[in-house]
Length: 160
Image (cartoon, rainbow, N blue to C red; front, side, top):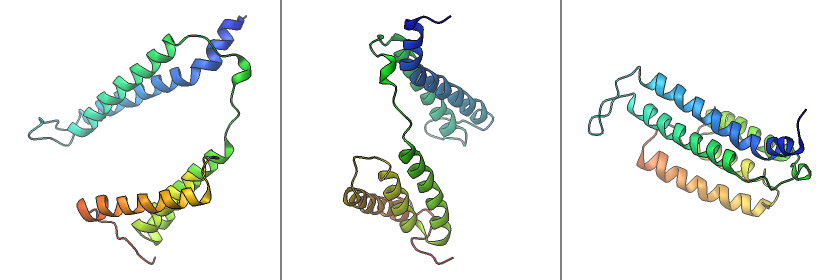
């Protein structure tokens, strides 16, 4: 039978601990998969360099998050469990769907605007106006970085 301190640890620290472990596993998967490609060096990077580097960073962050969750003091009670934020879930999933659909049939600019605007509405503290401003600003940044600077082959606007 679990004691009160065991239940308290599980309710307070479980998300951070399991999230860190999941990050470690995904990072290890990226390292294993990326190492099957040529890694190269910093001056002559191979196709496996970037996935292996990101996998290693992900493993280190996962260790840090899981370690911090393990070492955190037990201060919270079970009454502090937060309910699921359905609005946030639906807005984030809806924004991904909107990006895919608008990216294919509308182009980069409408897709970027939609993903940021809908995701921003997932936060209850954001107003329609603040979400609109954030989406407009991020759309400008996206156009400058991806379309102009990196010249990603994704049209700004398209019809079907």
